Amino acid sequence: MYAYLRWRGAPAPTLAQWASCFAVGTLLLLGGNGAVAYAEQTVASGIAALVVATVPLWTLLFAALWKKYPTRRELPGVLLGFVGMVVLNLAGNLRGSPTGAVILLLAPASWAFGSVWSWRLPLPAGMMNSAAQMLGGGLALMAMSFAMGEHLADVPSLKAVVALAYLVVFGSFVAFSAYPYLLHMVRPAVATSYAYVNPPIAVLLGVALAGERFPPWRWQEWE
Image (tube, rainbow, N blue to C red; front, side, top):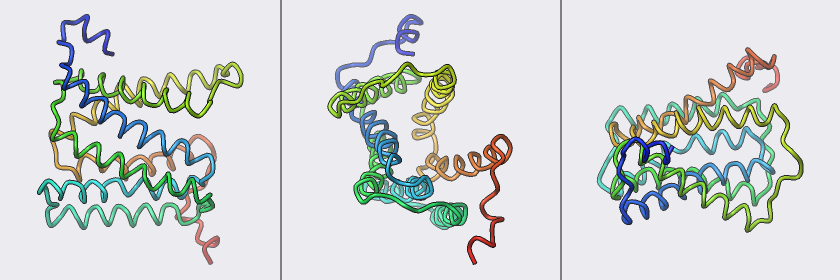
């Protein structure tokens, strides 16, 4: 994305903008996504979904530090969305290791702080902002991976490569590029409401494509 934008004539970020993009990218991609990916090796997906759903709550908290308070309708909406996430995951497995749980708790706080802090930092305009943030966050993830001694144990299967390509296109080029734009165009509660949208979509896709059952209808498992 960076190479394409430069080819199309977009100006390169200044030194101050690079520093800001590396800081925000590290908080979002390493502290947010990376921490969740690491924690889910030892923490059940039900816990992960609930903890990640606290992103809007953390965002409102950090936004208040810069005098951006929620409206009378936003706070009840965020709380109602979190209650919905709890209901959605009542039938899930809630096991997890203490270390994984602690790392998981830091992930939404890191993502929320990076999101709010980005309002105060000098950042490039347009898509260059997303490209520079992903470069910074990607380098931070690679450095952490090398520090932990991670490596490819085998040649990835075609299915894994296709899945990764899907995430590159729709998860990074499309979704992540839209996120910085939203952060600067709408209020925090709206920008981070994606945390309440992703899990229901994942559940519905599981029902449609993988033969899974819709958790809230499994009342007999809660009795």
